[in-house]
Amino acid sequence: MTSARPGQSAPDYVPGHGLLAGRTVVVTAAAGAGIGAAVARKVLEEGATGLVIGDTHERRLAEAAQALGAEFGPDRVVSVACDVTREDDVQALLDAAEPFGGVEVMVNNAGLGGTASILEMTDEQWSLVLDVTLTGTFRCVRAAGRRMVERGTKGVIVNNASVIGWRAQEGQAHYAAAKAGVMALTRTAAMDLAEHGIRVNAVSPSLAMHPFLAKVTSDELLAELQGREAFGRAAEPWEIANVMVFLASGYSSYLTGEVVSVSSQHP
Image (cartoon, rainbow, N blue to C red; front, side):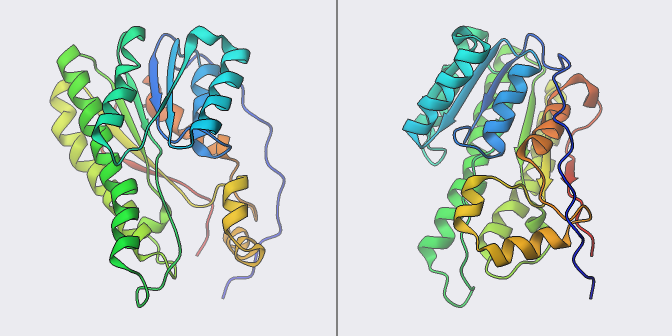
């Protein structure tokens, strides 16, 4: 059995380099302090001229849009309440990108977890996690893909998966199945959209620390998970966002159908 690694400090924040200059980006589940919020900030730092953020938490969403607008310019940021289990909400989110010229980069970050043994998991628990995490991603890929094809946009779609789609973890049957589905969806959607010049990739983070995760996870489990990582710490959300920005940028022009593991976890 491998012993826990001592924790290292996080690296210095990496500033923007204009990787998304002039692009219009849509990000789901972008309120709060997790990966979605980090991606929203990153795309603006990387020069996106239009950002549309969605989330089900309307108050946090409005606060996020206001803060980003104050820092980067209110004309660059629009927020739309969006529940990815509702097709009308997904369409409204993408409609908000039209004044910027239409969606060019779609980041599908929305997901829902939970912990329950397979022996105790209800149909409702299973269905809700699958509907948000997998079917919600499908709805957004389909909607963004259709708009890109109609407009002739050689756009990019980036999905958020998880190493739990590859690695077993107790109590995560619904989440693991959903994230494995996101990986398979990414690969197959990439093949469907390749003829239109649209790329589809995903990231697969292991552990990214943010306040919501700390609130719903015990200190003991967090310590155990961090101890499995090669650096002895969780990733900062912006470290995951950096890889998503890379996948959305021209630096990854030959990548499609790939799932990039953003992890330092050792066996």
